[in-house]
Image (tube, rainbow, N blue to C red; front, side, top):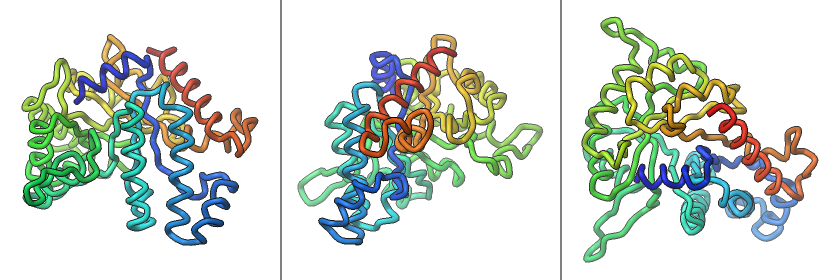
Length: 305
């Protein structure tokens, strides 16, 4: 799977992932109004507004990017109707040839972890049929429970040629409360990196492993250390744009050949029309604003690489 992602990045010359993390407050009023006129101020109405919003953004950006990353929580808040739109979004993006990284951050143990892996990247036996649930291409995984929580995902990666990104050093301000704590003189995030290497050795796909790492761009010095520790691990990099990281901060996440990382932007792309210099597009042309924001982001990153 990771080899497919690398090829898509090379084809598009865009190490960029668009985070499809819709909030109703991001959606232009005319889109919400149309959905509410049809379905009322209901969960179905909210889900319809999200679907139309997602579709417009994907239609305007799919040819520029290799991947999208829908955050499942943004859909779960609208219950079953929201999850239906999550699935619909996954299907639509894959029809467009995009790789879909489900941002679910699942983590548990034993059969529960195996069930999560099955739901998101695996297949389930239903009578005589083998079916898939959300069938995303990759999914984010929380390693807090150790190998018991991650190995079921690795097993599915090997069986189905799928991928995962394990949380190693996240971009949020309080990540250091746990991740930076020293154990025998080493920060915890380095110990997690060691385990990512171990897990990843079981499922290499060319130069890189199907077990990747989430490494926040907001901590470039730590990114530099992790890049050296994990030269054959692909990084999913949050923190660019809205969280404050710049293109210069991203550089340590990449290898010398310009590969090794894919950078996510969510609000900066999907809500671009609300911010300068994209407000000139206006709410009616929010998809065009998102397209221009992607073009600018790609140019900014490639300038540094």
